[in-house]
Length: 360
Ligand SMILES: Cc1ncc(COP(=O)(O)O)c(C=O)c1O
Image 1 (cartoon, protein in one colour):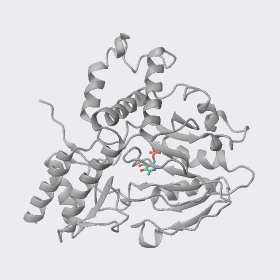
Image 2 (cartoon, helix red, strand yellow):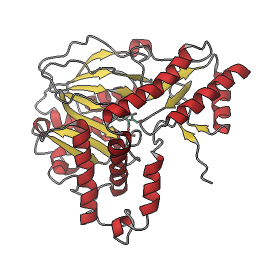
Image 3 (cartoon, protein in one colour):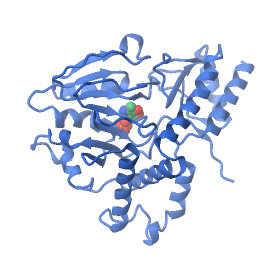
Image 4 (cartoon, rainbow, N blue to C red):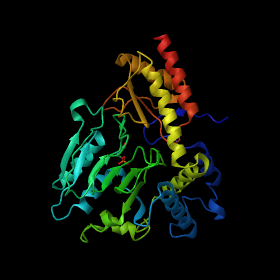
């Protein structure tokens, strides 16, 4: 009997069960090669078909035109905090940053460490990042505007992306990548650590437009230059093969089992709606993010006191509901409900929450 829990971890996080089963079934003999996916060469036709299929699926799902390159890099999303300003801000040019939480703050810091003259044009720090700033004025001469579309720790998300005029957006979508359709015309680059919505840790997906690639100065270390990877289909050096393979299977699941991003979005809205509606009807649980800024991916909430929060997390774990502790920097509770989280998991969580409230 397969003993699995409902996994609400923030990342690494739940993966679709059919994907895990496919990995298990083909683990010792990938595509008739007689080898595991973890044993084949990245220069083999087997791996070519994996990475090329992954790239094509991302292009179809996001309706990308030929100007966009899909890359799979290492160093996590954190490496992108450094690579974006390094590649795009030569000649003392500036970019605008919006600070909506811990990860945006880190992205800002990495640009400042390099002495790049960036401007923080909006921040929600005044209220502990519980909302998404609105009506932001951007600088017309900025090279890019950097945003974190979903704030994993604070539980907020841009409901719609801001209008940045002609300035391309560079967006950290680590925790909401491929969870909903997005309008790509104003987006110059997206990056996402895979370990929340689309795969395991160890690989960061980067979608980058040609005009941003063209900004890269020639004198960067090869491993920090986007062109190195764009010109070699992400295989300048050995790529994270297993991670890319898992991503390919998750993309196939989104396209073929879920039915694309509109359907993924509808399911994600339904899941988050059930949780928020219940919390709004209760005096016991309180969602921490402002309405209108609430994340569909990371539902952060508080109970009346910290002792109850501790007991809630412990009791939930006993009931096979894992990963509900809030991030150590903010406390409280958090249910991360990325693409793979099922409606069953949400219903099990809400039943448990009702029971816990009744007994407390
Ligand atoms: C929004 C966001 N950006 C960046 C990161 C950092 O990602 P990584 O650990 O892949 O560097 C995280 C990790 O949780 C995140 O949630």
